[in-house]
Length: 319
Image (spheres, rainbow, N blue to C red):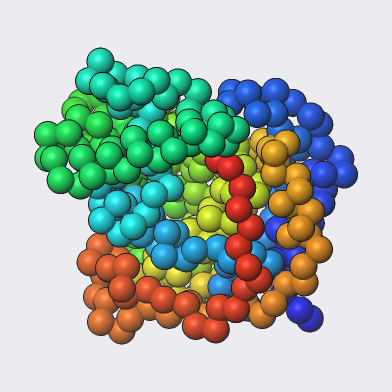
């Protein structure tokens, strides 16, 4: 049968290239986009981490555990050599009165085009990371990304100044009311959106229990199909495994519904290269037997068996 899960993703890429609309965007890069797309991944068949390019699973698992801890400061990520959120925190620093280095305006695009500027950018980013890791006051001021995913998942603030732990609540409801149609966690809090470094792209997910299996559907308002979507597929598949384990269930499907699914114009060549490759056998997810609860899991407790991908394909991130 081959790797049917990965073909779901490759079909999305091809559909956008063939039928998408070219549009402007917030970053000034430009995208080719389609609106309203759904993929289904059977988690019984294997773990859907892409094999047509190497996707760094260590970054996916540390980011998900960061969310589950309710953390919004990039220090935890940097301690695990995870740099995927750096640019948004870095942008806050270089645009602040506290920044005393060379002009870094439009750093995302200029770093790609100007070699001397790129060197300055790398130097300032390295300095920024060291300050986050070693200076508590600096980390507190510039390491936070606002009320992003972890805050909304674990500490949703109510109008009465109480907090709701949506993850604990949904686990309780899966265990006690498995046929409920309200097994939902939302990251999209309209009041908090203006204070977020990046408003949630993956905005809401819902669980569904049938025949002893837990399925999850994600609604994602916007998806960078080459760089971001492979992470999202793996992250929510991992989350489904962890929640299923917590609730003594098997895994079912991960259903991925995307609003604006887009490929950036400067990713076209990379996507075409990936489409030229044949998918390989899916990896197997391993979770340590020593894990008692999802709230105590560590990055070292999660691993993959038999992950054999094609080489990585680099592409610039649009900020």
